[in-house]
Length: 340
Image: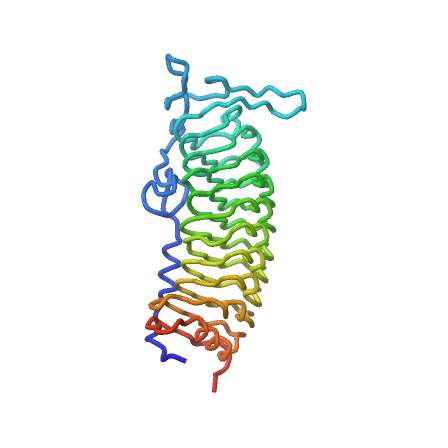
C-alpha cells in the first residue's frame, strides 16, 4: 500500500463544483456561461417568445402562441397529433407548456419551471431543442407526458430537478442525444430512471443525486464511455449501481452519502477513470466491482468514512487502481477496522 498523502477534502470541493448556479433568475444550473444552454437563458415571460415577422418567419419578440407561423394542433387519421415542421425561435422560458403547442423545434433552451402543471401536455410536437431541456421546480408535476417525441436536446443539458411529486420519466424514451450533461436531482418520489435507455452519451457530468425513491440506475444502460464526471450521491434507497454496466471510461467517479448502497456492482465494466472518490456510504461492504479499473498516474484515490467497509477491502481497491509509476494522492481511512 502506498503511503497516504495528507488527507484532503477534495471530495468536498468536487461536490461544490456540482452545485448549480442561478439561471433565468430562479432556475439553478452549473457550467460556464452558455456552455450547456442554461446559463445563457433569458429571464422573464418575454424571453424566447415568438412573433410572426413580415416575411412569415418566426423571430424573438414579445408574443408567442400556437397560432404563430404554421403551428397546428390538428390530428392525423391515426388520431395522433399532426406536427408539420415549425420552429420557435430563441429560448422558451417562463411559459406554460401549452404555449409550445404545434412547435417541433426550439432554437434555444426549453425550460419548464415553477409551473402548476401535472404533466407537459401541449409539448407533444417537440422533437428537438438546440440548447437543452430543463424541467425544474414544478410542485405538482407527476409525469413528463407530452415529451414523447423528443429526440435531441442539441448541445445543451438535460436537467430534471426539484420536482417533488414526479413519479416517472418514461415519456423521454425517444430521447437519443444529450450534448452536455445529464442531471437528475431532488426528485424524492422518482422511483426509476426508465425512459433514458436510448441516450448513449453525456458530456461534462452525469449526476444522480438526492432522489430518495431510486433503488438502482437502470435506464442509464445505454451510456458507454464518455468524458464526464459521474456523481451518485444522497439517494436514500439506492442499493446498487446496476444500469451503469456499459460504462468503460470515466473522468471522475464520485459515490457519496448513499445510505442503503451495499456494493458498487454495476461498475464492473469500468476500465479507466481519473479520480475515484467513495465516501460516507453507511452500509457499503463491497467495492470489488472496481478492481479491474485503473486511474491515471497522478490521479486521486479517496475511500473514506464508509463504516461497514472493511479497511482491508478499501486498501485492496486503492492498490488495484494504481497504475505502474503512480505518484498521485491516496486517502484511505475511517472505514471498518484496520488492515494488518
